[in-house]
Amino acid sequence: MKEINTEGYRVTGTVKLSEIDTYEDFNESEKKLKKELKSIRKDLGDFQDTLYAHGKYGVLVCLQGMDTAGKDSLIREVFKDFNVRGVVVHSFKVPSTKEKKHDYLWRHYIALPERGKFSVFNRTHYENVLVTKVHPEYILGENIPKIDSVDDIDDGFWEKRYNQINDFEKHISENGTIIFKFFLHLSKEEQRRRLLRRIRLKQKNWKFSPGDLEERKLWGKYEACYEEALSRTSKEHAPWFVIPADNKDAARLIVASIMMEALKKYKDIEEPELDDEIKANLETFKQELEKETT
Image (cartoon, rainbow, N blue to C red):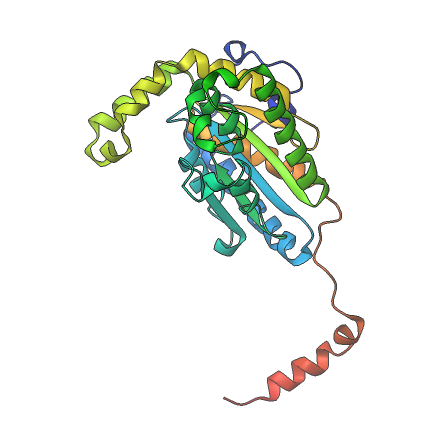
C-alpha cells in the first residue's frame, strides 16, 4: 500500500467543507485497510508504553463530527492494542448541574491526560462553539454574567470563545500535552444511510433518537460553524485534521497514521535508563532470584 500523505488532511487556512472529499479507500480492499491499521495500532500501543515510562508528556485526542460519523467505532479500533490503563475515553454529553457551576472548559480541563497516558475526547470543548452556536439559547443555562438573553450573545462573544479555546490549548501544549484534533467529515447522504441502518437493524435501534432527525435539518448551520471553528483554531501546536469519514476503515487508518507519524518525531520520548548502581548489580539480582526455591 502506498504511503499516506498525512499532511494533506491538516487544516492550514480557511476551510470550505463542500470542497473536501468525504470518501477515501486508497484503491485498496477492506481487508488490506484493516491489515494496515492493525500494524500501526500495534506501534501506537508500544509507543504508549514508552510514553508512560518516560513520564513527561500526555496525549490528547479530540474527535468531532456529525451524528453517525463513526467516533465510537474509531476509538474501539484505533486504540485496541493499548494497555487499558494507558488510554482514558471521555464522552462529553449535556453538561451536568455540577459542571454548569463552573466555566465551560472546567470539565475538559479535569479530564486532560496524565503524563504518560492518552485521553480521548469523544466530542470535545468545541461543542461550546458548535452546538451552542446553532442553539444559542443553551448558553443561557451557563449563567454567565451579563448574558441575560440570546440578544446578548453577539459576534464578540464567539470571538472571545475562540480566543479562550486557543489559549487553553496553547497552555496545555506548553506544559507537555501533545494535541491531535480530528474532524470526521461525513457526507449528508452517508449519514442518511447510517441513520436508516439504525432503524432497520434491531440491535442498532438503541442508537437512534428522533432528535437526530431534528439536528439533521440544521446540517447547513452546523457545517458553517465547523468551518469557522476549524479555520480559527487550527494551530501548529494543536492542528485540526479533516478526515474523510464515509469509509470507516480508511478513516481509522488515516487517524492512526497521522498520530504515529507525528509522535515518532518526539525523539526525546524514550524509556529511561536504570540507575548506574542498579544496572551494575543486575547480574547479582538475577542470581539471587535464580537461587530461590519454590
